[in-house]
Every structure is written in structure tokens, then in C-alpha cells.
Amino acid sequence: MGRLFSRRALLSTAAVATAGTGMGIPSFDHRPSPRGLRTGVQVLMAAGYELVRGRRTGIVTNPTGVLPDLGHEVDAMAASDEIDLVAVFGPEHGFRGTAQAGGSEGFTVDERTGLPVYDTYLKSGQTLADVFTRSGVDTIMFDIQDAGARFYTYIWTMFDSMEAAALAGKRFVVLDRPNPITGRRAYGPVMTPQFATFVGREAISQAHGMTVGELAKLFNGEFLDPRVDLTVVKMRGYERDMAYEDTGLPWVPPSPNMPTVDTALVYPGTCMFEGTNLSEGRGTTRPFELIGAPYADHRWADALNALGLPGARFRLAYFTPTFSKHLNTLCAGVQLYVTGREAFDPVRTGIAMIVTAKRLYPDAFAWRYDTSDPARPYWIDKLTGSTRVRTDIDAGKDPDQVQAGWSGELKAFADTREKYLIYRGGDR
Image (cartoon, rainbow, N blue to C red; front, side, top):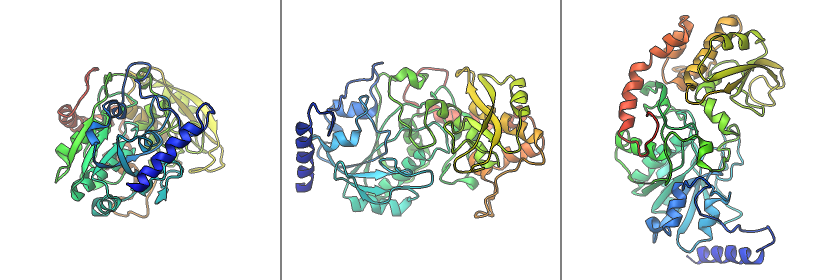
């Protein structure tokens, strides 16, 4: 407690010393967003941290753990006498967001707050439980902005953290945030156990249409054994059919290749191009919106626009990735624009794009082959949750036929999902 007191005293002194200078610790405005919405962390703060008062608390978070004034929740908590925050746990990309895809920051001491930051990336089970035990916390909070897709790994960081908290006998608190692509409905195929990886641990659909708080309830009710002592701090003023812009909250990129809400809208579909030899736009300013390859040409945009896909339009585009696939090589392809969010189905759109590319460029198109996993060598199977999407496309099926292949399992997931929804609004 001496070190904690010293750190808070230092933060308070810095705040006073720099008042009016525009430097140091910000004043942290915890009022609702301009649209009247409070995130879970704002609800927690408005109640004076009563839920975790007297507990040694840690938090799994990253740069998205912000307040409406853009101050970070960890900085606010570290400066507060109402919460005993003793540890931070960083996911992929790290707590402060300094690492690229597939990387983390390792164990560090946060320069601003003096808090120890433990690395959770690629840790699970007893290994992660031991990290929680070593940190000395008895309550673990989670607050990271999700992107709404099964293969966006932060929800599996939450799942692994819940499982580890249960093993370590810790309480788990989710501070809820909006699903940025809304929660009207779920889309796409459902993960099967044979293809479970860190891009999909359990049987949820490719676009789940849930907040992280709702997912935590589903994980605890359907998949975790033993269950964790779970509390979800609900948002106030949120309805599930809200577009992210309707919330009035600032958008902070949750990872380096998720720069805008536009990226999140298309990501559940165009991330499937990670399973092909086309660039998914990494190394450009519009990742997952720009898709192409050195072998593509103007015909792809024309063919896609001719399909009349609901809520989507395509522009012929040329780009040169600065990293990842086709590094420093000119690619032709498309930029995907969402012209009508309510009609747009990201997964079906992504399937139509793949089907059309394979038909136009049959001698050049290829599935990405993972030599490190000979039992499950095709990356697309891990993204879509089974071999079915790949084999259906290889068999020449059209997008509607491919989509029909997952309709039954999607309906079953939607029925399960309904039991765990917290917020209303939209057609669910």
C-alpha cells in the first residue's frame, strides 16, 4: 500500500503542478457521452467504484479503455483513492498499444502510473491463472473495445481470462462497451471444435452481434467449467441497434489495422482474405477495405458491382502494401464501400468477393496454406470454423449456396444467443 500511496500522491502532485499548462494528468470528465450513453467503466466510476471497493483489483485493457474526454481509465483509476488498482494485464498489441499484429509488450512497469503490466497474449489455462495469482489481485476487470467478429482476438483474451480467473478463484468484472457494427443480428458460419484456435475458441458465429458483456454471459453459461464469479457492469443509454456514431463515443483503434469504424463494418467478411493469396489491405491506410493482388484487374470491381450486393459498392483500386502480403508490389483490386448498413451482410459480401475472384482468376487464386499445422493446413478453415466454406467454393457453388450451408447452425446459435442479450432494440 505504501507504493500505491506514493504513486497516487505523485499523480496528484503532477496534476496540481501542471494545472492550466496542458501537460501532466488530465482532469478526467466522467459525464455521459454527448448522446447520453455511459459505458460500463463510466457507470462504475459514477458509483464511486462501489463494486470493487476494498478489493485488490487488476484490469485487462488497452488503448480503447478511454473515457469520453479521451483520458484513459487506468490513469484515472491510478489517481483515485476510491479504487485499489494494483495491476494491469496487456493483450495482443499491448496495454499501451505499442506492438503490431501477433505481438505484445511483455512484462513492463507502466511509465505513467508506475503500475506493473503483465502480458496475457497467448497465455491461457493454468499458465494465465498463475499470472493472476502472482499479481496479487482478487478481482479482474476487463474493458477492451471489440470489433464484432469471432476472429478478432480480444474476445478470446476475455474468454481465457475468465477461465483463468475461475481456476485462480478470482472474481471477474466486465465493463461493457458497444458492439461497433451493432447487435441487430448474427451472421455467418459457426465455429466447430476441430478448428478451434485463438481466432475462434468456441461455437459462436462469425459476426456474433453481441457486446463483450453479453458474450461474457454466454461464455460463462455455455462453455466454461467451472464457471467464473462474473459481474457485467451494463451500459446506460445503449440500444443494440445503435450505429457506433450514434453513441457519441470517440473511436480509438483497438489494434493497428482497425483504424476506423468503417474497417470494423467490413472486417467480419474481408478478414477471410487472410486465408487467400490476395492482400487484405494490411500495409495500406484502409486495411480490410482495400483487397487485391498483383494478378487482379478492373474486371473484379465490374463483376462485383454487377451482383448488386445489398448495402455494398466497389471501386476499382490500386495499392502497394508497405508490409505483409505482396510487400512493395503493386496490386489491383477493389475498395469496398458500405452504402447501406441495415442491408449489408459482411460475411455474405466477403464470400461473394472470394467466389468472384476465384472464378475470374482460376490459375492465380490460391488458399493460404499453413505448413506449421498439417492437420489443419488451410487458414480459411480456421477463420470460417470448418472446411465447408472452402470446399463449397472449390466445388463451384455460388454465394447463396455457400450461405445456405451454414443457415441451420446459425439459427441454432441465434437461439442460444437470445438467452444472453442484455440490451434491446433492432430485430435481433
